[in-house]
Length: 414
Image (cartoon, rainbow, N blue to C red; front, side):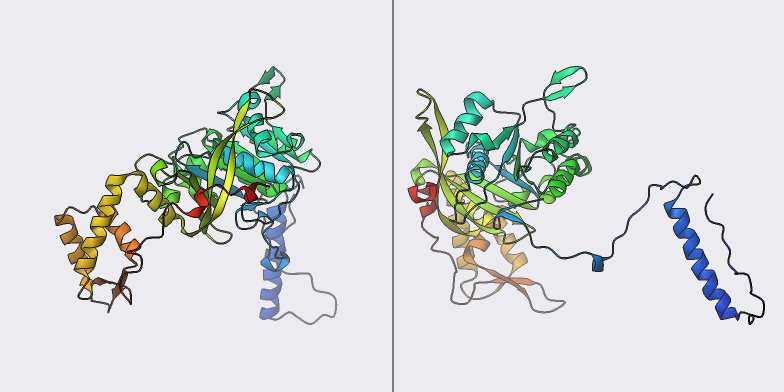
């Protein structure tokens, strides 16, 4: 039985009578004690399930435990997404190679020596994953590929939608546990509708718990939806917006057309933990494996550091991949320069005339961003107006393309 509720304590012989304030104080204390007892015990005296609260004052602040400063963090879920052909899986394997040999990241910073675990539902180990690991210079003894799941009825394929809890137990038994877990593709961890936020969040929570419990950086691989060029990178990820919202860091890739130098770019599209801009150029190179005659595998050759926001870098890559879109962007920029040559113009008027001139709203927004156009509102009742930045246009002369980061830099791969 729970503790009885006694609001008035018994009076001792000779004690002064309690005042009304005393009685109220005692009553409040007794009620609090009774509720606490009821909340933590059952009628049989056993602990019961309930809400736990921790005072912020009892928690000691800790720094983010970065594997790669600003890019990969222990205990967090990350996402890498992009168009087909940009080598997202190969990038993940290159990260594994850096960690398993204690090498250097693309920005030159040193990586810790650590183990890596990976599940792949799209590539087979013997002819794809292991050759790529070797080509990247990984230490295969430190890479652990999830190859199956054993039950009382026998062995079966590992299913990330149902077996993440068992994987967490297995990783906890490793000494030390891996620093990085790659899940490719991440959508396979969702049992329900991958386009519904609630179902995606519920399905991915075991991965979030695994990362936090074991200090593992989880890297999920995904794709961009078709026809999403120009949108915010996190909104381009296939499926529910919950994929990009749940990940603490979202990385994005894009491929450059051959007429502009080829190669690819990796950008930091979102980060709740640090900076969310910048990136690196890279090339996908086919390398022969010296120890295995007749076998070749894809590897990443890193280039230089890229400046700018992910949306801007991806938009420029998308535009050059589509000459018609690039031409439309230049036309829209010319339209805006002409409209704003004599000073600020109401945004409503600009959009109306742009529509009448055949400029798509998405292209107009890209042109506005490229030119550094300022949107301002003079007062509560005044309308928004656009104007050129002081000194004229900011970026009518776009940076040279492709960036130097999309050319091979052998020093990055030593």
